[in-house]
Amino acid sequence: MKNKDYLFVITQLVLFLIFFIPLTENISDLPLLKIAGYILFFAGGIIGVLALLRLAESLTIFPTPKTDATLKTDGLYKYMRHPIYTAVILVFLGLSGIFTNVYKLIIALIMIIFFYYKSSYEETKLIEHYPDYEAYRKQTGRFLPFL
Image (cartoon, rainbow, N blue to C red; front, side, top):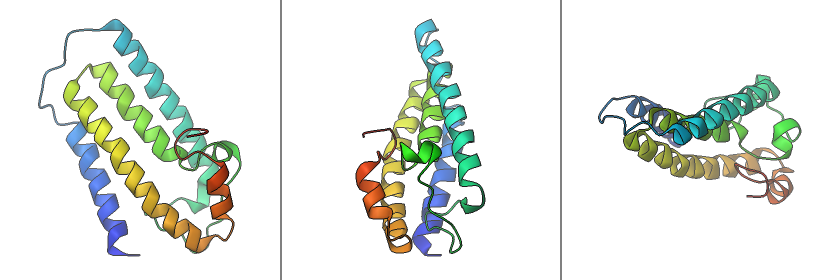
């Protein structure tokens, strides 16, 4: 495990904690924004559960894969390389809509940038660990299919 692994995990935890600090009041009730928020929240939850179940014993909180882990390229992993990150992003974007809070939306947008960099670092480790990862990477979207 390298120091960068710990830095990514600690930063992620800090972003999660900051998200729930009530620094600003919610903006006025916007029913469509709340509905969109619930849709994103539940979609993220479903994606997250399915991805966690598929990853199973290969799951680690660190970007560096476990030495005994196997590369998953089926299930949701057939369509996106980082469905757990996608799930977290969708859940936090959804919560921003549910709470109709600009501060929470800004933190959720920062999370997108954070997960982009975390996944880039993770992919350097996955390429080192799995010879087939580069081919998989070229044909599979990072967070969403075809993106």
